[in-house]
Image (cartoon, rainbow, N blue to C red):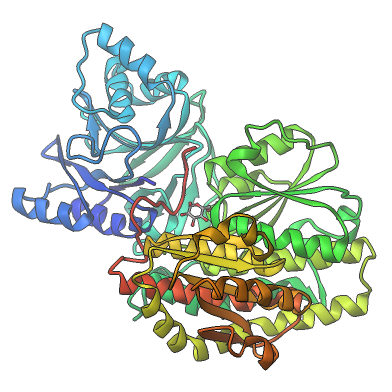
Length: 609
Ligand code: G6P
């Protein structure tokens, strides 16, 4: 999704803007641009393509010289990726960058056309720039406020008024935006990593608040233009965490960070060998009465929810419904007062997940957010909150955020099972002890399976299509394995419940088609092996992910390639078994010449519906 940055201060503004934008590249984009006050005029340079294309253009035309400006990476929504559709966009006296969608832009555009305005781009953003210019009364705050009242949808804006060359303005509704501050300088950004090189201190802009940034600092007003005092936050993510640190890509770096990420996430939440989520607003008392649970999320986070369903139902015997947020919010879901709705999200800003959370609250449900990004909208609006402490996840394809989402889901399931008295304290202690061992098991897989996965990835590179199969928790996990591969290699793949194959999908099996079978659950392994044999006898090439305790007679002669992961408590196997699936996807991506950190068409944080 689009990335916004802005700067006011003594440094070379063009340089700060481009450097900050590089830290937002992970969000996904197709064009980039900056606008800087140069000799009291706004000078804009923008282009379709990547930041290096912008840098080339800046060299060609000369970079704007100045100390106040805004910058943008665009992920096309309205209008194709092109130079003219790139941001910043301008009216005669206003220049803006924008993240989000203006839902009523057609109506506003028609109005402006009727007033004689003309447009050069297809974007909704240009409509806002023109509207600001149309309404401009010499007072930027009043003008912004006036325009805000007319806009429908979600947006974050960075704004420059030609008459005020010493400042930029920032405003947001739904879309994320932070304001960073340091001595004699301030910043705006869509996400914290963009400013970490310069400062760790920042404010979270609230909905409909307007920030005014000058070199003397930042001031905030609310929608009535009354001043607002805000709490200064300090980012505990350091620069290094948002850098590649010697790895060729963020994705593989983040895969390697998983043991630490799990430890950091679980250890503060364990006391005397039992889960302790009190700080997150969760005790056996607060959760013991939940009779129905719905888990709502998108993408990878939804797959963590699928694992959650199996684990919570198995341990706590509470029915769990897992829903895709964009479906949940539009289908009048059955949520009753007293139900629990869990929203899982790495970014905490996914538009559909946020809307699902609000819908659940409006129906009287209690809400629990499992979120990675501190202070994000979902984190702020939920009744209970457990942060996954994975640190910044930069690669578009989620790895360490997913694994920490699993870890949190387990902690919650254990606590709920205790509350429901469906497991004993001793059993819970045993499960916690097993959970504490998972970082070592993940480390073992990284140390011992990476080469094997790298080799197997060379066999996948020419595939047109793949199947992932499994049963129970292995099925939930295979969904994530399949998504990972699709995201970063562009190879079509599907995940199927192994037992369902013969009801149609088996017709797809052709000679040499790779099938990745996940079989870590002892009680269903013989069944999965039967399904493997069925596809193998029709020509499939089998890659089997199983535990090192899987009986030889089961795997020998069945699989073309075997990846063994250490056996642990079977309920916890997804944490370990997902790792080879992530590594396979990473190396397949590399073998196919794809940049795994920035796959085409994808965005890290999807802040539009
Ligand atoms: C995007 C990302 C996925 C992610 C999904 C949900 O589609 O590309 O990797 O799983 O959004 O994001 P969230 O931030 O809510 O976990």
